[in-house]
Image (cartoon, rainbow, N blue to C red; front, side, top):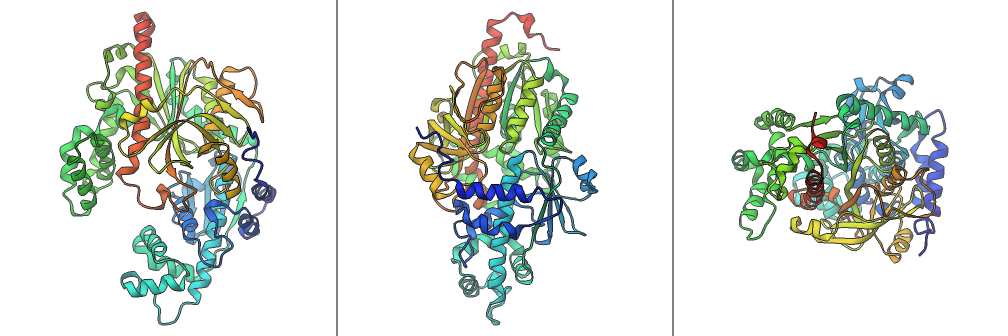
Length: 577
C-alpha cells in the first residue's frame, strides 16, 4: 500500500499552505492578491479555471455559498478563536452585525462602517478552508469585473433579468454558458442585477489578518466551549455518555417525533401558493407504493413552517416539548460555533418516537442512566480538540458515533458510505477499525441512494486542497470517501484508550476498543464531476434521505445497546437522579 497516498502528489498544495501560514505570521493585514498565483498553481479540483480568462462559475458559486452575503461590502477579514482574542485587539465584534453563510457554519460578525468581517476559527482547518475560499472568490470576482466593464453599451444588466435574448447575450459577453449564468441568478435571486452592478463598479481587493495563531489559543477556546456545557449539564461528569457528532436537527427530530404530532397543520401549510413545489413532492410521496420517507418530509416541512410568520409559535412549543422530554440545547455563543444537545435516554417520549425507532423491550429504557451528547459537527481538526476535551471530563463514554458529509469517488449524491479504513492527512496515520455499522443498518431506511460499506476514507485538510493528481493516486489506492473530520476524531479515539499521544505516519490498529465506534458518511459531492454538489443549488427533501437513514442507524444502535445494558444489570445501577 502506498502509505504516502495524499502526500506523493501534493507539492503545489504544500507550497500554498507554507505561503499562507508564513504570511499570516505578520502582525499587519495581508493582501489576498499575494496568494492568487500559488492558489492557481494548486490546480484545485474545485477551481480548475483559476488561470482562465473566462469565469469559473462553479468555483465562484461554491465560494458564494460558503461566505457571508456581506462580502461585496467587505474590505478586510480578521480571524480569531474567541471574543476575548478579538477584544484584546480592540474589536468588540459581538456588538457588530451577525452574519452567516448558507453552506458553511462559522460564527461571523460584520462592521458595515469599516467593512471588517470577523470570523471565529476553531482550529488550523478553518484557516485552510477560509483562505483558499477568499482567494477563489477574489479571482472570480475580478474576472467578472473586467468582463462587465467591457459590456456593449446597448446591453443593460436590468434587461437581462427578464429578457431571454438579453440574458443569453449577457452570458456570451461574460464568456460563460447560459446555464451557468442561470445558476448565479438562482443563487442571488432578486439581487442578481444589483450584484452584477456592484461587481462592475469595483474590483475585489481583500485583506486578511490572523489575530492569534497559537495552538494554546485553540485549546483555550475548546476548554471554554466545554466549560459552558459542563456548567449547564454537570451530569455529564457522572453518568454514562454516548457521543454523537452529527447536526442539530435529525437526531432530535427522530428522538422526539415532534413534527409528526402536527401533520394536519403542516399539510394545510402546503396549500399556500408559495409551497407549490413542496405540495408536488408531498403528492408524489402519497402516490409512492413503497416506504418513501413520509416522516422525513414532515421534519423538513416543520423547519419551513417555523420560518413562516404564522409558524413561529411552534418554535417555542418545540423547545418546551424537548425540555419535558429531558433534552437540553446548549448553544455556543463566544467560541466554537458548535451547538450541543444533551438527551436523557430514560425520559425520551417512547410513544412519540419516530416509528422507525420502535423496537422490543423499550420499557427497559426507563431504567437507563445514560445521556446522549450530540454536537453540531465541527470542521476538520477542531474535531480532535472537541473529542479529547469531552473524553477528558465525561466518563464513561459508551460509544462514539460520527455522521457527516463527504465527497464520493465511486457513488452519487445521496449515497451512504461506511468506512473501516481512514487515512488522515493531519497525522498522516492510516487508521484501521471495526465500524459498528454495516449496510444492513442503514439500507432499510434509505429510499433514494445506495449504501456502500467496507470503504476507505481520506480525511483531507480542506475542500480546495485537492487536485487531479492527488485524486488519481487516492482512487488508485481504493480510497473513495473524502471528508474532513473522521481522521481527527480517530486520533482522539486513539488517545481515549492508549497511554500516549496519537502517533504520526503509522498504520494504527483501533480494533478492540472498550467502547462502541461508528462512522457513517452521506455523499454531498462528486468531485470528479465538476460542480456537482448539494451546495450548488437548493437542498430539497431529497437531500435529507441519506441524513435521516444514517441518523436512524445511530439512534437505533444506541437504544439497542441501552436495552441490553438494562437487561444485564441490576435495577439499582440504573437509578436516575
